[in-house]
Length: 203
Image 1 (tube, helix red, strand yellow):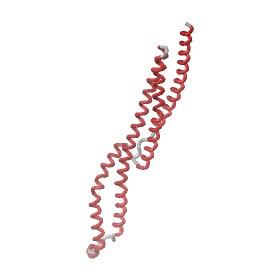
Image 2 (cartoon, one colour):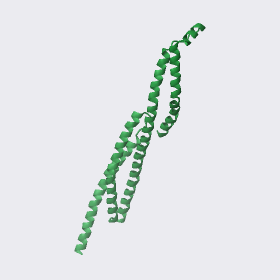
Image 3 (tube, rainbow, N blue to C red):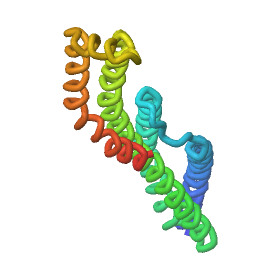
Image 4 (cartoon, one colour):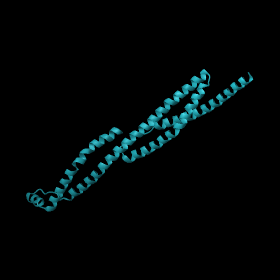
């Protein structure tokens, strides 16, 4: 009888010790989850600017790594809770199971939110990069064309002046060059709306 009571008391003390450790670890983890949930809820929408969305993606990748680093602790805590639940009184068992259920629900929601946002940022960054790679050379080209056109002397209002300027080789060459450039750039310009739609869809 003495040994039975001693064994029971030892198990009870062990259970109380494990319960204390479990509760302490659970409180710490739930506090971290709450802080991270708050951070995620205040994150700005993905930017259409490539440099900005690239920075957003870097921050999200860091947050994802923090989540990954926490996963072993979460799994260990759930295992500890399951073990503790099996040796606890019915009332304590129900409380522990409810705590584990709340932990699982919030953890899964947090992980999904962080990784869904990362995937969205990755897609947005890719689309923003494509758009920038298209718009940058076109903008540079348009600036060049404007300079070429501004260098052409204005056409006069008198018929003699018009005929004289049309015959000038420089004017003809400039206009022909600009026309050819416009024709070659037409396809690139036409693809911009498609890239823009992809970019805005990913924001």
